[in-house]
Structures are given as C-alpha cells and as structure tokens.
Amino acid sequence: MLSSGIIDLAIGLTFVFGVTAALASAVTELIARFIGLRGAYLLSGLRELVDGGGASTVLGQAGQDYQFVQGMISRGLVPLAEPAPAELSPAEVPGVPAPPIKPVSVSTLSATGALLGGPILRSQGMAGQISSRKLTLAATGTTGRLPKMTSEKAGTLWSQRRSLPSYIPARSFAEAVIDLVVPGASGQATMTDIQRGVNALPQELSAFKPSLQALAKNAGEDAGKFRTSVEQWYDDHMDRVSGWYKRYAAKITFAVGLILVVLLNINALTIGRTLYNQSAVSTAISAVAAKGTSCPATEGQQECLANLQAQISAAATAGLPIGWGTVRDCAEPGARCGWLDQRGIFSRHGNSGWQLALVLAGFLIMIIALIPGAQFWFGLLSKLGTLRSSGPKPAPAGS
Image 1 (tube, rainbow, N blue to C red):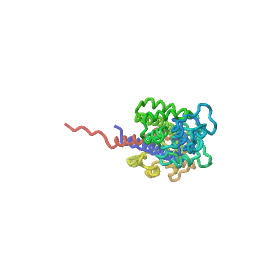
Image 2 (image 1 turned 60 degrees about the vertical axis):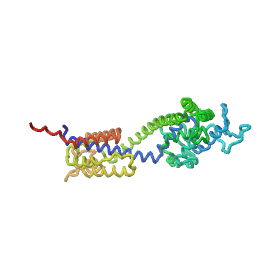
Image 3 (image 1 turned 180 degrees about the vertical axis):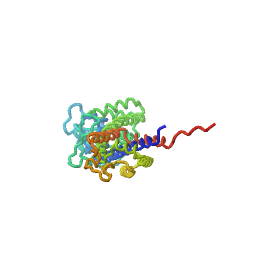
Image 4 (image 1 turned 90 degrees about the horizontal axis):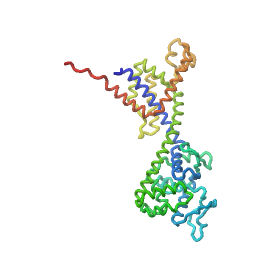
C-alpha cells in the first residue's frame, strides 16, 4: 500500500499539471474567439465540402449566389458547358424574362455562398450581417491549415471573422440544401422535385452537384432518407473539420503553455522536491486540490480563469514554489546570493551549470505535461483523491 506522503506528492503534481493545462486551454479559447478561429474553420469546412476547394468564396456575394442558383432552377435553365463570359445574367437567355437579381460572375459562383445566402444564416439570425461582408475565403491548397482570408478593408478582417457563426447544425444545413434545390418547397419537397432541382444545378458547382446526385439516387423515393443522408454527409465532414481545428488549437495551447510555464516559473522538479521534503506543504496542496476544477463547459471563460487564478494563488500561499520570488535558500539570514541565485536559476553553493540543467528539465517536464490536457489530469486527480480517502485496508478481526 502506498504511503500517504507518496499519494500527496502524486496529488500535488497532478493538480499542478491539471491547473496549468486548464489555464493554457482557457487562454487558447480566448485567443480563438478573438481571431474568429472557429468561424474560419467552419467556413473552410463548408467550402471544402460543397465547393471542393475550388474558386474563392466571397461572402458579400452570398445573397446573389443564392438568388442566382434558385432563379436558374425555378426557370429550368442549365448553363452552357462552354466557358461563360465574366458577367452572366439570365437576361442574356433569349425568350426568358430577367429575374430581379443582380448579375453574378460565374467564375466565382460558389455553392458555399449560395447556401450561406439562404436559410443557414437566416436560422442563425445573421443574414443581414453576412450579406454586407466583403470577406473572401481563398484557396488554401492544403486541408487542415488555417484558412486564408482577405478583406477589402484593412484592419477589419478579424472583426469580420468574429462575426461568422462558430457552429451550424446539420439540420440547418439539410434545410438549406433542400431550400436551394427546391425553391419555395417550405419543407414539403418530394424526391421528384429534389431530383429535378439537383439536376438543374449549374455545372459550375462541380463538387456540390455530383454529391447531391449520388445522395438523391441512394435515397430512392424517400425524401426523409435524402434529408438524413445530407445531415450525415455534413456531420461526417464536420468531424474532420473539428480535427483540423483541434490540431491547430493544440499548437496555440502549446505556445501559450510554454509562455505560462516560464512566466510563472512553474517548474515540475522544484515543485516535486518541495512536496516531497515538506509534508505540511504537501498536505495543504492536497486540500486545495480537493476543490479543484477542470473548467466545465457550463462555466464561462472569465469565471474559469478567475477560479484557476484563485487556485494558483492558494497553492502559492500554501508554500508551493510558483513565481520568480526569492528562493528559500537565499532567504536565510546572511546568505550571499546574486540575482540568478535568488531566482533559483543558479546556486550560491556552486555547480550552477547543473542547477541550470535541472531548471530547464523541470520546465520541459511541465511543457510535456500539457499535451494530455486538463481533462486527463483532473480525471487522474479524482482517482488519486479516491485512493487517498479510502485509507489502508482494515486488519482482519481476531478469532
């Protein structure tokens, strides 16, 4: 059976790892919100799904794309396969009255823009905002990287990205698809209407049209099955987009954690040595760890950061060596220490090179400990707390 001192040491280190990882994750989430990272990846995922990474998607043209595609479908017009002029208007088709929409450049016609110009953003309450955005999503060349976006107005790119929705439900996406291919159906579209609308989509939507044709063929005569297939198609791709986002966010978390570890002087070896040699500090940290939090989803980022700051302050008050204060060895009366000695980077007793190596190793251990994430460490902390509270196995009663 492990002694209570070893368990307290493990609890203390696990608590420090968890709080540091949670703090880095909270800061990463704030950064992601500030730069509109979730909205950028969502828009990039939509474009990869329905446009196949083709022409740029201009959000300011989303409403026009939507009206243009619906106008062509409702009039049974199929664009020519030959290269189209730069500006194509339905008014140029002989014998067909021009609909009341502005001309759209076929070279930049985007299924993403057409979908965003329809019920997707209306359901998000953002139709008016998105139609005024002069934000362009350009081709990235490699999936999973941060999407490249440009704006006509310098200095407004981040604010425009922050205005994008960070999540679109699969149901809203399926409704947008059906609304686009069957104008005015209002949820009563039949498979005959859907297949006709899909076949009438412009050939410029070269990635979107074949995918919908395959889903319509597999659905047979069941419009409900088609809707479910579109939702599943969207969900499967958004799982990939979520993986792209998490990988990019992990890089930000790693960089943030590196800065926090050095800035706050959170050294795993120094903390472990203190917990092992000073039982009073180890016991106090175990008591603080029992009240630990892993920033649940129901808690706001500001509240989470405040709680984490309070926990770090409580740990430092209990005697945990966090921060760049004067080390205990240099706090003794008559001790002669330089600035680096006072910070614990060098040692006043000599062997400063070895001391510096230990400091760097302690930082490296802390940075590596950020990789599993706060959820892993707080889960382990809960198990260690149960082990500590269970105590030793009672001795069998005498016969």
